[in-house]
Image (cartoon, rainbow, N blue to C red; front, top):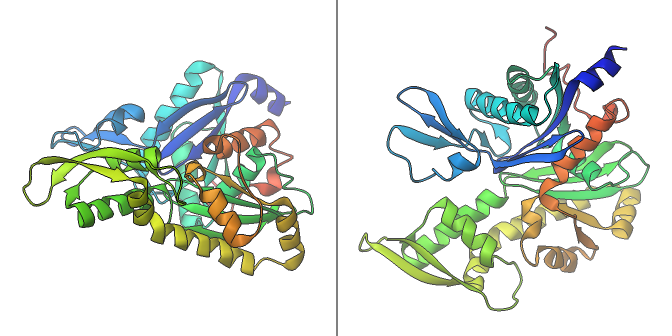
Length: 348
């Protein structure tokens, strides 16, 4: 009875709590928010000045008393209070779209190697931000559900979810993760590689936002059509502004070591996967999700090294958020896929 009432009079919200971007899914409306996981704080007053897109535009451009921070580092909460504020802002924004009587039920996606302490932090942050009920799901599992893989069947499926802070490599069968690995090689690491490369090779200092722009514009892992981009920054020799032309081969060289480590991580997971599941993966292929799946040539590189078909998920950026939305449609059906929060969260 109460469940039916809650379904009618409260919202169901799915959150992909990412290092780079946070996506919010609202049942009945789809993905309603896709904003950077950035919060701008006024350090004099302690008040939040901006959240999301508005705050990201402030990175590297703020006066001394305003600080733009990323409360989530490597997929894990590093600043509890700021994360709570960000979640409250996002839940509030989603609730405005569809006003309901009761507080919402929330499903949050987290990295696969998360500890009990980190689960507790996510649970508490979502509760404090206004959630009535909090369910936590591992991101590769949520991505697999979002891509509509048969996660509950006795069939092996493999997902590589390349986000901003972490890459989750997971082999899934019978509603559980059989083998997984969480790497700190993802979008942010590639941005830092580009910053380091331009500093060393061109004696040019650029910011994180510029590095990300170059990566998206001309980043690739295999030689292809010639591409170039203008990059502006500070000359480390003269200290004055300077502009250089960077080519796709420069970016390839900058990120090559990280990409090689990523491929090694995938190999490690495959090496420890039971042979029956491995034969399923060889037959069905591996699915790439997350923003990193959009790097040009990554699917071809993995396919040539692993000799397994590689597919890029449709709209890879929203796979985890879509998966959390599917879970919200029938929480009872997907209950065994959720992280058991009883060990991490003491009874209230």
